[in-house]
Image (tube, rainbow, N blue to C red):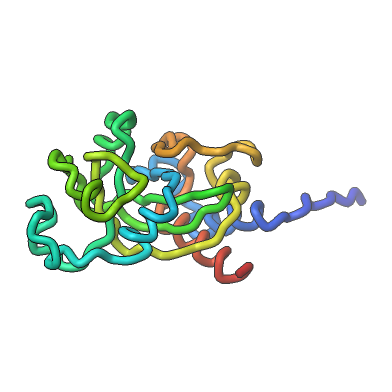
Length: 188
């Protein structure tokens, strides 16, 4: 009888497996985009970790009218083509210093031509390309674990703002978000 050794399951391999197991039948053709976004800590804290009460500002963009308290972030102007691919309900994974620090879902996207966010709430981020975030959840997941989900090399460091190629998305975005939450809860 031949014995076959099972591969060693590291934490990041278990995370990738858990995301697959949550939806084993759907391995290709996921329609929702997934974006990986590098953050500026102070600005991220001011507009994503903490909601901004739009009603407190009379000069806010029209696109934010009647939204009350919101969370939002921006895309670099140099990534306009990628930003224009964002649609409501797309998943966004925020990262900083080799760790994913939050997940959320894209709400409204718009161009802030008056640079309201730059002059009102951000100190290190300068862009007119704004997107609102719904259902933000803080997480603490090593980049290597997320890299396995998308079949990136362990040492891969994503750029500041990118869309994950469709061929790399082999699970439903909700399953990926849930896997990051579970990993974070278990290990922190």
